[in-house]
Length: 616
Image 1 (cartoon, rainbow, N blue to C red):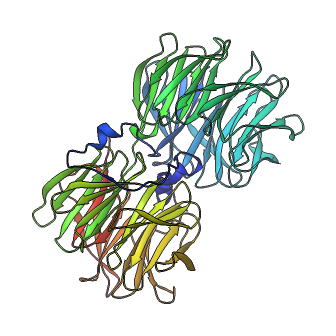
Image 2 (cartoon, rainbow, N blue to C red):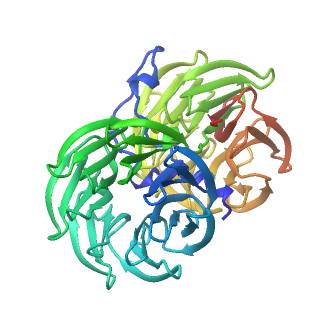
Image 3 (tube, helix red, strand yellow):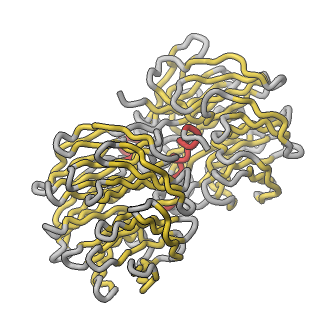
């Protein structure tokens, strides 16, 4: 797996609870004055910059950015970005050993931990760990590193002096976060699916106790008071545990979706990031009471504290930034940009219009590729990734993760005519013959079936974790769903809404499209940088079309037998001749300088492109 190929995996790291599943309701009629930017101010999920850690000795802040597979280094004295260090595939979490000045980064895409020399910023080595490593923690006294492996249900123990794995400890289901009390040599692990915290004895690597906590997320320890603080996403609270008895002392009610916690032991202050309240809660550890709530970004994810400078650092994926909070005043004093993710793309082959979504500007751009002119700018959701067109009904469908919505527009007037509540929507595809709309649900691992006539959800089809791409064959009424990392495409019978078969494909299929006339499936394979051409009748691989860059989106014009491919980090769209499987023209999407196109779909007669403007 190449580093470039795994950039798109960050689009779906929302799996482990980043996405709130909301109740399914019928469509809400909306008028053309709708403005999602004001109605839905809390951006949901847009993974790019996640883990953040502080070296109190050097006052350096380290931030993992999965889009560019790098670790960003910030000077805490100047709040300036000073380095970008290449690490493994899809870096996620960061921890620092201040005693050795070594930095440890978990890489989800390569199942490894990168070791960085904090003095030179050199990448020393990569250490293999379990499947889907999430957060990492360090005991500076024993020089042991602990890694939570989400899909292996284990914790990997690394000897920091040799960079070798010395133990693997079974814990609960879906371990996510860790915290260490170096004084007692206890390691605390949150198990999300099990709803528990495992307590590990660091001297013999055995589980001593298991504490019940409803859907735990982040965890932190105050070594001075021996108190453990655990975010409970289910309760929207922070659970306080006595580290001497492993008993829950109290539960502090907080804001929506707490996912990260850090402690300033010197001041006995606890900091909790609330993802869907876009805020940082400040708690007095002596009274377990809320001191204040600080607005930070759109959807903050991780937090760490420099207890020496009394500075708090919060990563905010949607704004690609780290917010710096002065702990003495509880005010944001700086915002440090640390990278950018892309957006998505779609095509309508009837009127030859291209549509591009800007998640960063919350808009859908319609333009004419013939004249290279912009036709309209349409407000959409804050994190809109999927777009599809029904040319028969002249409807445009756009998914928005932040508001758990599917927006339905009149393609003629570009007016919003309905909003359908859909939990964790990502990709969208349409069967024009049946007028059914299909939306992948990242949070529940399912595909929702929506009536295009009533805009009501009629069924939910379980398909597995991380469904990221959809394609429809309107002639056979078959729906194709790619499951990220599963090496297969699930085939759904649209008449029964059941999975009938699976088609083997590559590891990272980011985009799908179907030509119903030729019965051909086109899969954007980000692992091999190819378009996999598959016979829809028998599931056989017909051809691999090699590409120069990592493909993300793919769309088909059935009438012309043309395939359109978009790439990560590029504003180019390649065309492929479906009769010869050869690459033809390369089109530059106009008037969108610095845009990374990531996904698109084809229906009707226009090309609709979802994009995100890069930071400069």
